Length: 289
Image (cartoon, rainbow, N blue to C red):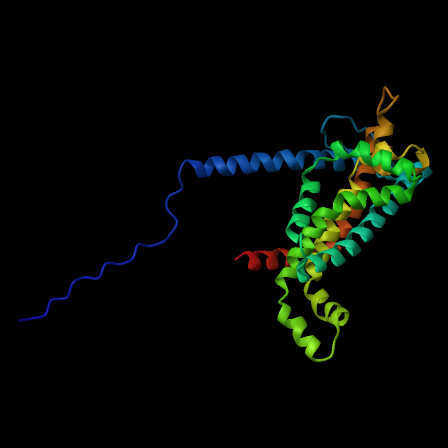
């Protein structure tokens, strides 16, 4: 009897099917959302080089940088920029240093109440700034830190520290503890292994935490509005707000030029830590896989 072979069913081909009705709608929604986000930035850049800038979006007849010249020669706005650099830069340094130490401790040391502490840290991040700004004002006033750089730096750092702590703990968790143990066997102590082994591997997390802390502090509006009362200590965010008060005619060209310069430090800082941020994204994806 001749043997019969049964046909082996081929596995279903996993290819892209025909696009359904939802796909064009998704693309249309994403394009509309992207345009909604791009239009304000387009207006800012076009108005900054337009000597006759208005509130309406219009293409300038010629590119004119006189608005930037007025900004550079205005000592008031230059002072605002310096104040923003001091406050945002100082708070970023405090947040980065504190989150590295705290994140390492939460990741490497087991102690009673660690889960409760982590939940409490996350809970402080959930509470909106508007609910905590009044108690923070009272605390800084009693400590004599109201209307000072030190008070602003500490408050901004306290607001950004919970997120940075969570980020750094997550990155330290991705570093195998066996690497530190091997370094201990070779004679390195806890501090030496942390600096030489753990920190280079956690550098993407440090860059990401510093970037988010700087962006949040640089763009903060409510905190300096409540804590700072001296015009010479206003950051750029408050300076732009003050430019609208008491004016029937707004100089849109000057305001948009200041806005462009105001965005530059954030863009430059992002470009500096971009490679660390990309590595942080990859490490986080691999850790969650």
